[in-house]
Amino acid sequence: MSNRFGQAYGLTVLSPILNDSDEHGIARDVALRAVLRSFNDAPESPFARVPTTHLARWTVIDDAPFESIPAKVDHFRSKYLLFTSNFDGGADADDVALQRYVTSLSTNIPDVLAAVYGNCAGAPDVRDAAKFLAYIVRCQVKTTFLFGAYADANVDQVLRALVAQRRVGDVNAHPQDAPPPPPQFKQR
Image (spheres, rainbow, N blue to C red):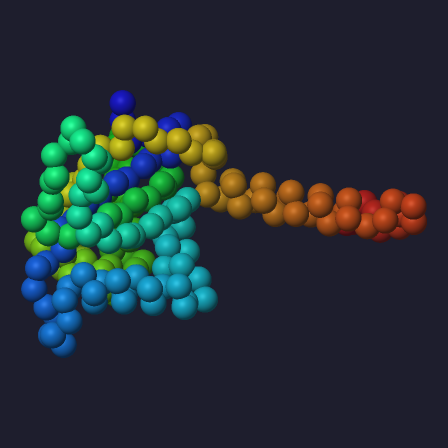
């Protein structure tokens, strides 16, 4: 299987978090969590500036969960940043779609990426799209079971459909026992 579901591309990236402290003496995973939390206070997601993103999420993974006997207790050597994103891949080959998306990330949210990936081992300057793409490819985990609600619709098509749905709902929300005159109803 591939990273695709229709035209949508599913990206999964595991980046090791540095085991040291930042310039303020704060452990990297703690600093990273603070950066990620700050996005909750923003008026919109940073990914709103990356127009082909259907959804995206970062989360910190502290350690491998113990799955009980007969499994062995496993531990990671570091904490990991998990990045998942579903984005418009279009008809392009996987490598081309991924390059286009990572370049869009580097171009549209470089400060966000720098704040996030500055806490990860081996992460290059995110403004260098080619080096950042190589890093993402190196840390990428193949998405083997991608499901999206809109396999063949891109973000723009989904947004237009949602606007149309809202408009139809608004028309239907008015009392039907006192409908407006036909010209006004048609305009709605």
